[in-house]
Length: 181
Image (cartoon, rainbow, N blue to C red; front, side):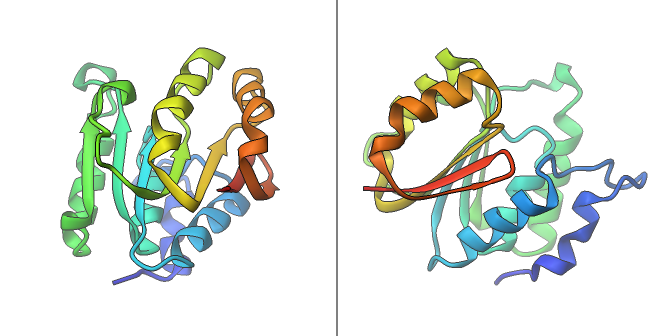
C-alpha cells in the first residue's frame, strides 16, 4: 500500500497537531518520496529520525524502513516516536517499520542488504563518515544513497571524499542523491 504524496501535506504545516513534523523542505521531500516510490518494495535505512516526518514519507511511498535515532525518552522526542508508531499502525505499515532508538553504529548490519540509505543523523564529519563507512557496504549496487543538510561542513566533506563511488548524482536544495556504482 502507498499513500499519495498530496495526502501527506499535514507533515509540512505548523498546526497544533503537526508542528512541522517533516524537517525536509517540500522540494527535498518530493524527491525522497519519488525515489522510494520508483523502487519495488525497497528496503530502506534512515539514520536520524528526529520528528519522524521523513520516516512517514518513506513508508507512505512504499518502503520497508529501518529508522535509527539515538534520542532518548528524556530528550522530549518520544512523543514523535509514539506518533510515528501510531500512524504506521493506523495506515497498515507496522510490519514495514523497525523503529530503533540506538546509535547507528551499534546496529547489527551483518547479512543486511538495502536499496535506499538516507543519512541525516549527526552532522559532524566524524559521525557522517562513521555512518557512511558502516552502512554504505549494505547498499546494493545501483541502490540509492541520500545525504541531507549538505551545506554543513562535516556532511559536505564526506560527500566530497566519497562522490567517486556514486553515479547519477542529483542535488535538490540541501539533499544529495546518488546511486552506488
